[in-house]
Length: 369
Picture 1 (cartoon, rainbow, N blue to C red):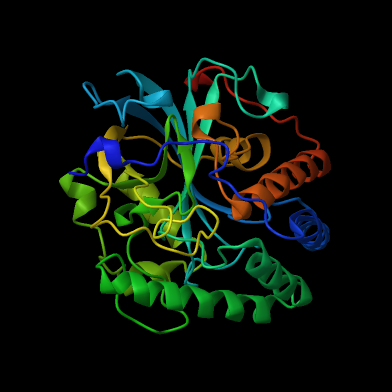
Picture 2: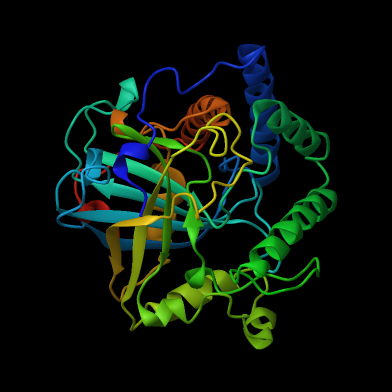
């Protein structure tokens, strides 16, 4: 294991403002806002500009491990404790598309009972903390310049569902083939290949975040045998054919009718900013230089995962924002700085147009059954 003295210490100079960053950020957010309005007119309902489709909303428990070494006992993880959590599984597109399409998948985690002032001013006194993870270790458009190019392409085709779906599929297939090489996906280049079981995926923060006195990336991987055996497992054709629009929802719901599942959260600490950059999220940090180290366990018990009440609560009432956090876990890098503006703009528009007040729960009992 890496000597703790080799871990990069967080300081304000870790982040470097990019040329024309404010101008580029404004262009990105303005483009997203225009697409949000178009999607609202299409659905007559405001949806998220990314990860708009839910597949399961789960109640769980996050257990911070005891006796963590100093470099891991930081921020939320500084002392052992169990926290109730709300977890939303989703698909990455900013439109509602069939589950059969290849796509990134997301695991958004809202930890409840987190004391201390939070990073965002308007949520400074909330007792929640969010972590947003995706089943891919990097952000392919890892800088704001590349992010703007991708967003402008999305906007230029936003009124053409078929074309947008094809673009999204091609990108996702490339991702899927990369994941297949490390056993995290089935090896296929078919545009309509949905990938392996969503509960067997490993999920990543993709970009760096502050980890107390250090800098890290976060992941969440299957721990209990029943979800580890789903890693890379192909979904049966019969399940897909039964409902190609919502089979991901079905397989999550069916699994948790009677099963408990455990996942393990890990932190990968930065040891070298040259090979583990903060300002380019498209660079994968090498695990042979700094492996993910266990910091907590996430446990789900049997439950109903997609009741109408839960879906509405997660889709229309809650927001998940990586910047809604303790300052010790603030996201880092230019791609995350632009996403901070994007999350805030999208959430305000969605809640306004759906006539819903944003809520940060004070207790897990607020999650509907």
